[in-house]
Amino acid sequence: MQTFILVVHVILAVSLVGIILMQRSEGGALGGLGGGSMGSFMTGRSVGNFLTRTTAILAFCFMLTSLTLAIMSKKETAKAQQSFMVQPVAQEQQAAPEVPVVPVSSK
Image (cartoon, rainbow, N blue to C red; front, top):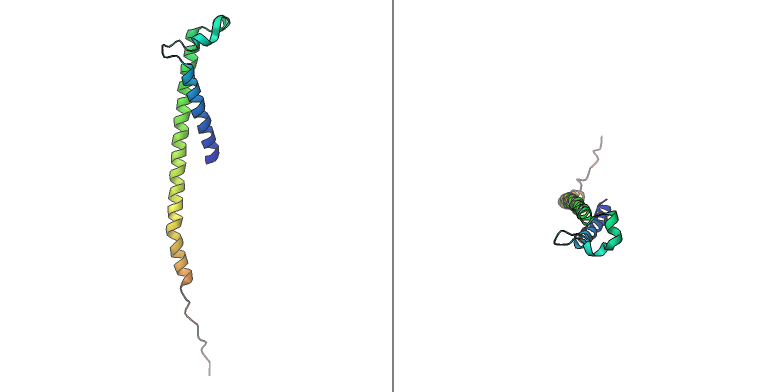
Protein backbone atom coordinates (compact mmCIF):
# COMPACT_ATOMS: atom_id res chain seq x y z
CA MET A 1 0.00 0.00 0.00
CA GLN A 2 2.84 2.35 0.84
CA THR A 3 4.45 1.69 -2.55
CA PHE A 4 1.22 2.55 -4.37
CA ILE A 5 0.84 5.81 -2.46
CA LEU A 6 4.48 6.65 -3.14
CA VAL A 7 3.99 6.13 -6.89
CA VAL A 8 0.88 8.35 -6.83
CA HIS A 9 2.88 10.93 -4.85
CA VAL A 10 5.64 11.05 -7.48
CA ILE A 11 3.09 11.34 -10.32
CA LEU A 12 1.39 14.21 -8.47
CA ALA A 13 4.73 15.96 -7.97
CA VAL A 14 5.65 15.74 -11.65
CA SER A 15 2.16 16.87 -12.70
CA LEU A 16 2.26 19.78 -10.27
CA VAL A 17 5.60 20.96 -11.65
CA GLY A 18 4.27 20.72 -15.22
CA ILE A 19 1.08 22.63 -14.45
CA ILE A 20 2.99 25.38 -12.63
CA LEU A 21 5.44 25.75 -15.50
CA MET A 22 2.59 26.08 -18.00
CA GLN A 23 1.25 29.16 -16.21
CA ARG A 24 2.50 32.63 -17.01
CA SER A 25 3.60 34.92 -14.23
CA GLU A 26 1.40 37.76 -15.60
CA GLY A 27 -1.68 35.59 -15.31
CA GLY A 28 -2.07 34.97 -19.06
CA ALA A 29 -1.59 31.20 -18.83
CA LEU A 30 -0.80 29.58 -22.18
CA GLY A 31 -1.27 32.85 -24.06
CA GLY A 32 1.57 32.20 -26.50
CA LEU A 33 0.96 28.48 -26.93
CA GLY A 34 -2.63 28.52 -28.18
CA GLY A 35 -2.48 30.69 -31.28
CA GLY A 36 -5.64 31.94 -32.99
CA SER A 37 -7.49 28.63 -33.21
CA MET A 38 -7.55 28.08 -29.45
CA GLY A 39 -8.98 31.55 -28.86
CA SER A 40 -12.35 30.49 -30.19
CA PHE A 41 -12.51 27.43 -27.93
CA MET A 42 -11.25 28.83 -24.64
CA THR A 43 -10.17 32.35 -23.85
CA GLY A 44 -6.89 33.06 -22.10
CA ARG A 45 -8.77 33.91 -18.93
CA SER A 46 -10.66 30.60 -18.80
CA VAL A 47 -7.42 28.68 -19.42
CA GLY A 48 -5.85 30.59 -16.53
CA ASN A 49 -8.76 29.73 -14.25
CA PHE A 50 -8.55 26.08 -15.29
CA LEU A 51 -4.81 25.91 -14.57
CA THR A 52 -5.26 27.69 -11.23
CA ARG A 53 -7.95 25.23 -10.13
CA THR A 54 -5.91 22.26 -11.36
CA THR A 55 -2.88 23.54 -9.43
CA ALA A 56 -4.94 23.86 -6.25
CA ILE A 57 -6.37 20.34 -6.61
CA LEU A 58 -2.97 18.80 -7.34
CA ALA A 59 -1.40 20.68 -4.40
CA PHE A 60 -4.13 19.42 -2.06
CA CYS A 61 -3.65 15.81 -3.25
CA PHE A 62 0.13 16.18 -2.94
CA MET A 63 -0.17 17.34 0.68
CA LEU A 64 -2.63 14.55 1.44
CA THR A 65 -0.26 11.87 0.10
CA SER A 66 2.64 13.49 1.99
CA LEU A 67 0.76 13.29 5.28
CA THR A 68 -0.37 9.73 4.57
CA LEU A 69 3.18 8.59 3.84
CA ALA A 70 4.46 10.29 7.01
CA ILE A 71 1.82 8.60 9.17
CA MET A 72 2.46 5.19 7.58
CA SER A 73 6.21 5.60 8.07
CA LYS A 74 5.75 6.51 11.74
CA LYS A 75 3.61 3.42 12.36
CA GLU A 76 6.16 1.13 10.70
CA THR A 77 8.98 2.67 12.73
CA ALA A 78 7.04 2.12 15.96
CA LYS A 79 6.40 -1.53 15.03
CA ALA A 80 10.06 -2.09 14.18
CA GLN A 81 11.26 -0.57 17.44
CA GLN A 82 8.73 -2.53 19.47
CA SER A 83 9.63 -5.89 17.95
CA PHE A 84 13.31 -5.09 18.39
CA MET A 85 12.80 -4.42 22.09
CA VAL A 86 10.66 -7.50 22.71
CA GLN A 87 12.82 -9.93 20.76
CA PRO A 88 15.88 -10.09 23.14
CA VAL A 89 13.65 -10.76 26.15
CA ALA A 90 12.07 -13.75 24.40
CA GLN A 91 15.52 -15.14 23.53
CA GLU A 92 16.71 -14.85 27.13
CA GLN A 93 13.72 -16.79 28.40
CA GLN A 94 14.28 -19.58 25.89
CA ALA A 95 17.99 -19.77 26.67
CA ALA A 96 17.47 -20.28 30.43
CA PRO A 97 18.07 -23.91 31.44
CA GLU A 98 15.17 -25.80 32.91
CA VAL A 99 15.32 -27.27 36.40
CA PRO A 100 15.86 -31.04 36.12
CA VAL A 101 13.09 -33.21 37.45
CA VAL A 102 14.26 -36.05 39.69
CA PRO A 103 11.85 -38.93 40.00
CA VAL A 104 10.93 -39.88 43.54
CA SER A 105 10.99 -43.56 44.26
CA SER A 106 8.02 -45.02 46.09
CA LYS A 107 10.01 -47.59 48.21
